[in-house]
Amino acid sequence: MKTLSLLGSTGSIGKNVLAVARRFPRQYRVAALTAGSNISLLAEQVHEFQPELVCIGSEELVDDLAALLPAKYQKRIISGNAGNCAAAALDSVDMVVSAVVGSVGLLPALAAIEAGKDIGLANKETLVMAGRLIMQRAKEADVRLFPIDSEHSAIFQALEAGRKQDVRKLLLTASGGPFRLLDKDKLHSVTPEQALSHPNWDMGRKISIDSATLMNKGLEVIEARWLFDVTPDQIEVVVHPQSVVHSLVEYLDGSVVAQLGIPDMQIPIAYALSYPERLDLKLSQLDLIECGNLTFEAADGDRFPALQMAYDALAAGGVQPAVLNAANEIAVDAFLNGRIGFTAITSVVGIALKEAGPGDEMNLQAILAADHEARLIALDAIERICNC
Image (cartoon, rainbow, N blue to C red; front, side, top):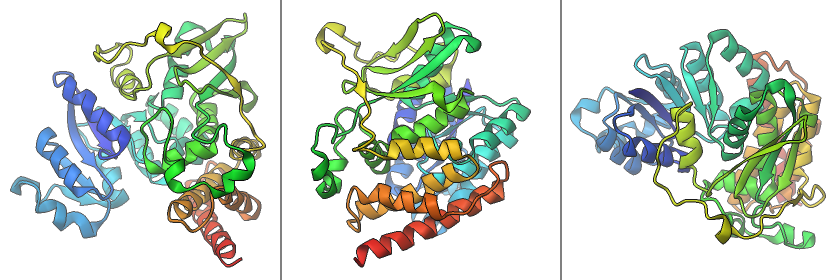
């Protein structure tokens, strides 16, 4: 039996992780659950899975959560990112599943690595912010990172078909989001509700907006660079609206190996948890006849500049990817709260990339300082946009 610590249990990925654990109770035990602010759902999960440790996002919510739980949990509730780190390093845990969203995933990932825990990684920001540092520490600790993002899981699976030295290119697929066919001059007026309506995937609010701007794909490019140890020019993004081919690997001999499947996150989650075995999930099967034509097209960098911003930040190196990520988090939140328009998201990120100072990508404090600086720059840029 594999014992799990699940960070971000009430989010979209977290709920799917628990669906897999629920289906296979003999294979998986959940020892720790952490969440942000959804105390009612977290309480339900605690009642069902009976973890050793529970963490809520802020200390102010501890008493409210405790009121919903049995007395035995009164001294087992911790809070904040320190709580996430404690859950990630719990002695009884075999694998940490990082399903939190945003930069909060970085320190718990480092805590898990230091404690010698393998990681099921759905939090791409961990590698965006500190890819080189994370991968070096994981290597030193003999810790493995198993991708949970559908695209990176697809690449992970396709890489099983050949040798690393024979890889020519990784091809990350993107659905194109809800605005793939919208006139460029209409993008500035789209609403958060429209942007949250993803055509194929059920995702959280922040990731849905990132998918609409293609920033999510840019972050995935940076993640893939570190996760699979390839150069940026070996990573290509192709738009595939049907979301059936989840990503591909091209080899030197011209062979292209793809992973296909229905758009259900339980598939990559289960593979990360069970590797190298596969679980019988009893999901709907992919019907290629029903799918019909599968189409591919180039990503429109003119309409969606976020993708090129990510490539540029990766090429610049240092703390620029951390700046990209932090500014984007602030800008997306401002858009969701109606403070800026859709196209202003990338404008704010661009300002932060230009104004933020340099830093050492192998220095954790420098990375965290860059994250903080980028947020301040982004907030100032938003104020200037709002006052125009």
